[in-house]
Image 1 (cartoon, rainbow, N blue to C red):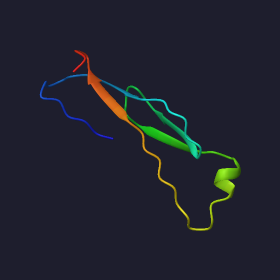
Image 2 (image 1 turned 90 degrees about the horizontal axis):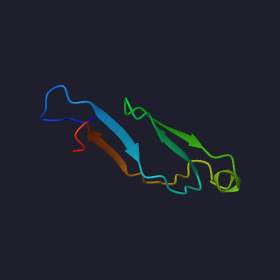
Image 3 (image 1 turned 90 degrees about the vertical axis):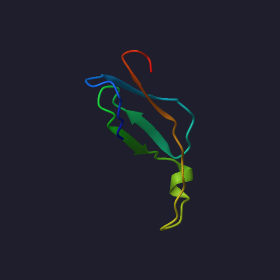
Image 4 (image 1 turned 135 degrees about the vertical axis):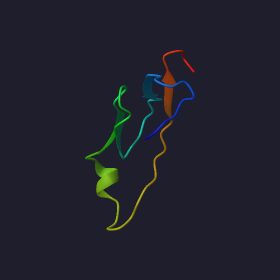
Length: 68
């Protein structure tokens, strides 16, 4: 993930809206914006056919030190 700010030298904080996801867990480093996704080990994942995909959506936010 990337972000830009018109204020040179702004510091950012990354976050996301937690939600229930059946296929895995999303995480984000608040300082760097580096994200991760860990696939769940459950019956829903096991039931996916070879090559089958499933989309999940996550709302990520980034704010500067002024809350903008």
